[in-house]
Structure formats: structure tokens, C-alpha cells
Image (cartoon, helix red, strand yellow):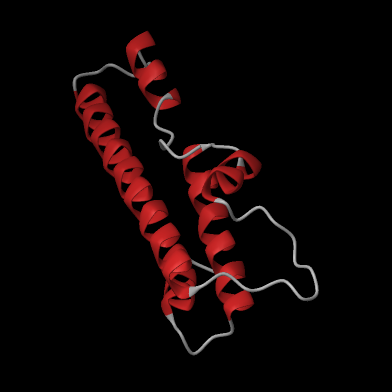
Length: 116
């Protein structure tokens, strides 16, 4: 499923809270795939790394929305940085530079988000 589909599920108060948490975790996984970050590290930083235990209270609506907003902000920043590198790379290729420079390689490695 796409990031935006899962984000809609997180925001929908008609879904059960545990399903909304699962959708939030799917959003975090998608973010980690985009940035190359560690899912375990990011989910621990966000406070969603706990397991389901019978009797445990589900996360509240405010927590789910606040966490999703944070992930979306970081994802949008990462996408903006990726688009900038993509644009710069297309111009370099048009000029005949087919190999990445050392600076470009470093920039690509640093595209990850600031979460975690």
C-alpha cells in the first residue's frame, strides 16, 4: 500500500486504534525505505516500537496524528532533497558528466531524514 493510503487510515477515527497504529508503522516503514534509515531506530525514536499486550491501552488519537505529522514532514523534506539531487544530476548528464562526483555521492548518502 502507498504512504498516502496508510496515512489516510491513520487519520480515520472510524478505524480501530490498533489498526491505525499498524498503518502508522507502515508509513514509518515506507519512510525508512525512502531514506535508508533503520526501522527499529526510527520507530523507537517515535515511541511506536512496543508490542501488543492484552489489556494495554491503545495509543490515543492525538499521539497517532502528531506522530504521523512528524513522519510526513520528514518524508517531504527527504523528497525535496531527492528532487534537488535529481534535477542537479539531470543537468550534469546533459553537460556530459556521466559519473557522480564525490560530492554527489556524499549528498546521496545524506538524504536520509532527521528522525531517529
